[in-house]
Amino acid sequence: MGVADSEVQSRIGHDAVPDAGKLWTDILDYVRPRISQEGFETWLAPTRGRAVRNGTLEVEVPNSFFADWISQRYSAEVRAALTGVSGQEMAVSFQPRDAGDSGLLIRRSPVRRPVLRPNGYRLQAHLTFDSFVVGESNRFAAAAARSVAERPGASYNPLFIYGGVGLGKTHLVQAIGNMALSVKPGLKVYYTAADDLFIELIQAIEKNTRLEFKNKYRGLDLLMLDDVHYLVGKERLQEEVFYIFNSLHDAGSQVVFTSDRPPQDIPTLESRLASRLGSGLVVDIQPPELETRIAILKQKAVMDHADLPDDVAYFIAARVRSSVRALEGSWVRLLALASLDSRPITIQLAQETLKDLVKEDEPIDHNRIIKACADHFGVSLNEITNGGRTKQLALARQVAMYVLRTTLSLSLKEIGSLFDDKDHTTVMHAVKRVNELRAKDPAFAARLEKLSKGISGGEPR
Ligand code: ADP
Ligand code: MG
Image (tube, rainbow, N blue to C red; front, side, top):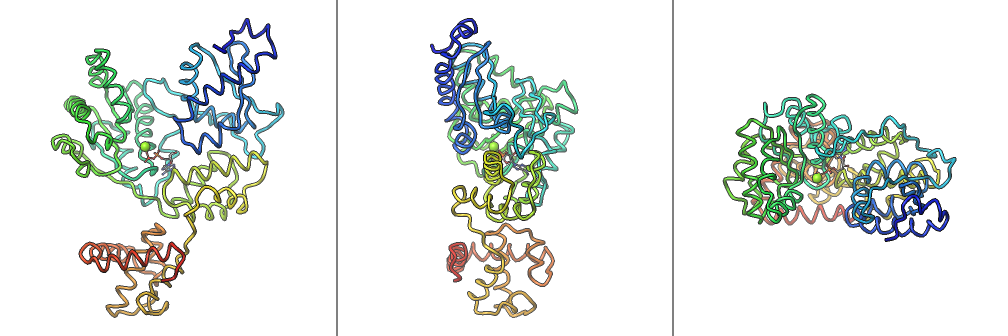
């Protein structure tokens, strides 16, 4: 089996090394498909099993920063793997390569180590409202989530949060659970994702434990059901969710859903379920604007006790725009590099980090966009940014605002400030108008697309 018990261990001493190595490799093989490739390569690839001693598998990691990080983020997966692979109770301890290592540049205070809540809730302690940065893009969703967490069942029920991948939906619903529990510790709170619920349901059917399954969900005070777009095409699951939702709702319990799209856009969803999902409050999360991206990076740095200079934060935030997850990925990667080589966090290091991480995310500065739009409409830069009320100028300006908004995710206020301090409502109106034109005029839509592509592809026209 390759797993020695502690008695065997103490006898064979050094010979235990290959066993520990093999055990850890098996564990890694189990963990690999369950976490992101990025996370695996960064954090787990540079580790190795060193020994099994006193029922503990000792794993060597590059430094104490890695030790902290792995035990904070991947302990659930490692624990699951351990039971699966070794078939016995065993602890894992992550040990820095150099005993005297102090975590180098980045010291994490032990107080920050999350207290793992009883597993039953399936909540991750670090996903809280405190660690959730609020900006224009998620303000409404965050406020709604908070109000639900303070008084589950009393305000918006159900709460339905939707938005693209990596924009913070899971974080928000986990925060709801954590906060609700700290307000009212006895609360029966449960988090699950629709795909996990599906597995659970299948197992309940196979093992003939439908009743337990039903009772478990029926008895909750607060249920967070993540990623309900997964329900598409799974009629049996839809039926079950419909049932669970109704019984919880009738009992006055709170339900929170997330999805990558609004309820009415979940195709083939049985209409009675679709209307239930959208029967409370539906809120969306948009990609974060530049300011929010900077704020998120700065907050991650504070949480990680690392020193992130403003220029580096800006450098990263200007380039990594697609999601908070990508942003966080870059930050984590940067931290890992800094800690491995014991280097300070500088633009140069950020450049190295981002090089192989975000290829397509070239920075586009706003001046280039405005210039490209001006050129496209045959007007001057001065005309487009200041005054000028002709129809052609107004349209050029609106298009420029639209492109700034869609390609750079600048805030309305920020865009306004680039055009002679226009009010944010003016920008909002511009974006809306361009969207309308786009919808009803295919030729305009094509021109707009060409213009946007030209800009992000580095061509001025
Ligand atoms: P989703 O569920 O929408 O795909 P997640 O909730 O998993 O996205 O978020 C991806 C990562 O980004 C998580 O690590 C989360 O903690 C982080 N994150 C997302 N939004 C924020 C935010 N506003 N402030 C801080 N961290 C955030
Ligand atoms: Mg999620």
